[in-house]
Structures are given as structure tokens and as C-alpha cells.
Length: 83
Image (cartoon, rainbow, N blue to C red; front, side, top):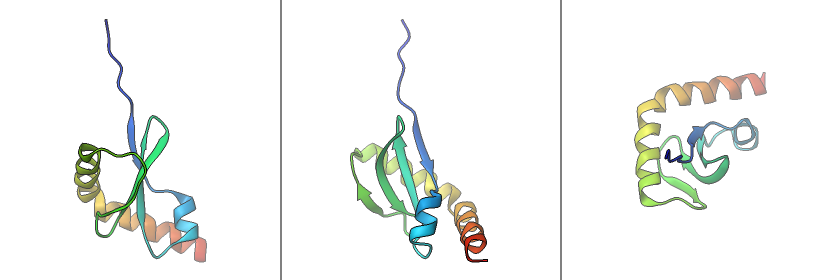
């Protein structure tokens, strides 16, 4: 018997980039359902829809590990929007 667990995804949203370009956020999805948002600059939880403590710790660790690349991607995309 094989057990299957959900897929957790962290992503930058073009919608967030358009609506609030000065406040970079990372969205966290579990099985395609939005469960929370984090500040890309401070790693703080901005919106907790349905995250457990371990979800928050995991996301903060991953965001910190990729923070500079994601901030650069955010700035590049916002720059394209404003061009």
C-alpha cells in the first residue's frame, strides 16, 4: 500500500506583483489551495489561512534560502510592468 501526501508549493504571484509591487510576498499552497502568505523581505506571516506551525517553519526556511533570487525576480517583473 502506498500513501500519498499533498504537494506544498511556494510561489511569487503576478497578481500580487501588479496589485502591491512595493510589498513582495510569497504565497504558500497546499494541494493547489492557498493556505498563507509571507513577506519576502521579513519572512513574517502576512496572512494565515490554514497553516500549521510546521508549515510556517518550512516556508520561512525555504524563503530565506531563496530570498535574494526571489527578490530579484520580483524587482525584474515589477520593472517590466512599469516599463
